[in-house]
Image (cartoon, rainbow, N blue to C red; front, side, top):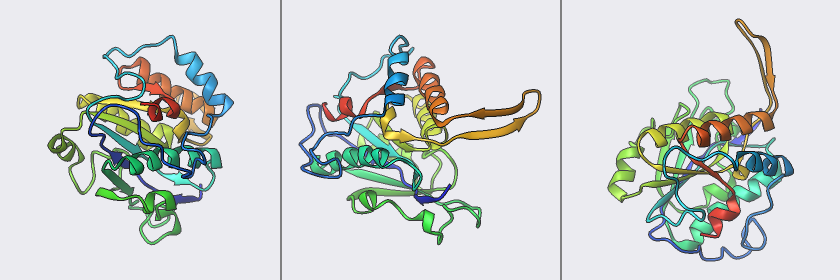
Length: 239
């Protein structure tokens, strides 16, 4: 995969209520682009599941929230970039702090290794005002060069909104750990993306899953498992 940039943005909301309109921004009209049909089907299928923990209300009207956006690759659809950008634009326009968590791979051959083109942040994240920047080399944003959990606690942040790529890698790992740490986690599935995967597994043989199947599995794992509440970007922006 040709990765253009790796990022995780953490954004705090000082209070509930609707975000200030981000202007034209990357989404064009101050709202999130519509999710793809496959994401709509996943969200519909998930509607019968509820978190085992009390989830935050639609709109993420919590006292504080954190937006986390993972790697943003060239092969992700432009719609995905636009949707993620609409979240970044909204938080920037609202004046709330943004934390960027940058993935620095330890493998020299990885596109995400420092010095390789894929390590650069996407433009719409690179220009966002960051209150905190964290470098990490594992899936979870909580294992970086700065203690994210300690910082969130110091800021009084208890709710997280997670977006980006890959859905079933950094996004899911960070969401699971956040849920275990007691945060209220919301995942706007249409603001995430992953890619087809295939490998040989002992006892199972060749196993392959499409990106849509992997996204559905992540959404089901997080919501039915009580780690997070799966929402849409429109719900987040309508807060």
